[in-house]
Every structure is written in C-alpha cells, then in structure tokens.
Image (cartoon, rainbow, N blue to C red; front, side):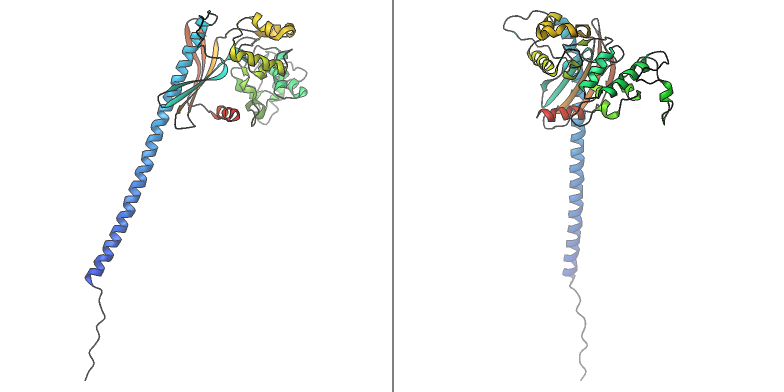
Length: 333
C-alpha cells in the first residue's frame, strides 16, 4: 500500500496579513518621526530667526536711544540739578548703559572720541605714552611713532626711526607711504611696526585700535571720557592717579579744568598742555539687543557726530562683532 504524499505546510493567510501590518506600522512610525523631527527643527529655526530679527531691532533702537542721550547731555550737562533729584545723563566713557524692554534687554556703550588719541593731531609725546602704557618697548615705540609721522607728512624725508616709501616698496607686497592724514584707524596696520597683535590685542590684552581715533580733530585728550590706558599716556599721570580719576568719574562729572586740577593736584602743570575737558562732537556707539532667555545677542556699531542741534552718522555697521564686548563681560564676572 502506497504511503500518502506529504504536502508542505503553507503559511496561513492571517500570518501574512499580520507581517504586512507590522511592516506598514513600522514605515508609518518612521514617517511620523521624520515629519515630527523636521517640524521641530523648522519650528526652532523660525523662532531663532524671529528672535534674531527682534534683537536686531532692539540693537538699532539702542543706537537711536544713544543719539537722544548724546543730545540730552549736550543740552543739560552743567545745568544745576534740583535738590532731591538725580541726573539721568548717560556716561560717555564706554561704561555700559542698560535699559530693559519687554522680555529683552538693550546694552548701550557710548564713547566720546575726544577721550581717545587722535593719530592725525596728537603729539609724539602722547603717541609714545600710549604705546608704553600698552607695554610696547621704548625702541619699538620710537619706530612706530616716527613711522606714523612719516606716513602723515607730505615729504619723503625719513625720520631717525621712521619709514617712507622706499621702505614700504621693499616689502613682499609693495605700496607707497600715504603722505597724508589717516582716514581710518585700520590704516595703522600699513605703518611700520604696527603688528596685528598690537592693533587688535591678544587675549586679555587690549589693542591699539581701542584707544586711537581719526574723528576728534583735537590733539588733546578729554579727561572726562578717557580710558585708563589713554590717561596714562599723559605726562604726569601714574597708574594710581589714573585709577583715582576713574573712581571719581563713577560718581561725578569732570566739567571744568578746575575740577580736574583739584583732582590731580600739583601734577596738573605737567599735563595741562595735553588735556581738555567737556564733551566732544563725535561718539562711537555700540549697542547689543538680547532676548531675556539668551546670553548671545545682535550687535550694531555706529559713529555719530553732533553739529549744532543736528546729528549725523559717519559710520554704521550691522551686524557688529561683539566678541570683545563679550570677553570684557566675562572678565567682570
């Protein structure tokens, strides 16, 4: 008797359907997760873009607020303050001024350019004094000062430690000395002896660019707004005396030359040919807009000039690199 032929067992229809359902669910889960992730990324990108635009407008509002404060200072500086009332005049020596907005903050720093050393007008004594206050060796300072003078003057006669076109034309990338006033502080990078490190600073060390200007048009220094490094460039001002001047300015204004003379005492005679007081006509304004939930922000920088009752812009940069300001904030913390 023949044995019955065995027929291989076939998967049931219900098993195949279950496998298909599982695969379809897996694919749907991947699609859902992908869409969810993309939506989340796009949502965050949209929020970040929105906050970036808001911070930009906040920073620009800070520039406008600074312009108002500059005019307010011009009108009200020196006006007697009523008893019991405090002045609301903003500082113009680079001290950060803060004003809050809804869910955001604006930090504004106003620097009177007259508190810096004008490289087109200042004497060799002030220029060398500044370089020494920044730690430049005497021989290197002599080279830089003479080279600045050679770069500015109209002749081709080389000073003892300076440089004229014959020196610059011998460089790997040759160029001629300008023989005219500098149009920007960045032009110093073309002058013999001025290195990138000296100009921009290095780490915690400030750079030459922070203490010089081409805007003040004055060979003297406004001690009402000068930084410690600039004050120390003035003959007769020691680091200790410079610190005392800065401490005094935290609570009071140096409004007259008599105010300053009373502050420095017998050293006044040596420094009087190099100093001025009051308020200049050109100001650098640095403004940062920040949302309250963020440490970063958007920066704007402008140079504002005052002529009579009119304001004008000599320079406007948006966005502005805030790295140096952030570094200074970290150092204070």
